[in-house]
Image (cartoon, rainbow, N blue to C red):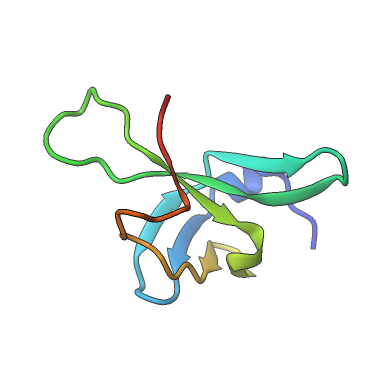
Length: 92
């Protein structure tokens, strides 16, 4: 299957373990030394009422992707929502 970044960006990402909608892909991470996709970056959850504070980002490794459909990307991410989640990237 082939897809462009623009096509992937339009699909909603859903965690199949809890049914949560995680949003749309904002970026893709590549390993340039071996030319492969490592994973996707998704927007994190906003906390509180501060709309001006940037939120954390969520890194989804490519091996967590279970299915890419026409409308959605289904992933299986076990550590979602845990404060020590290794997949949460802080904004710097």
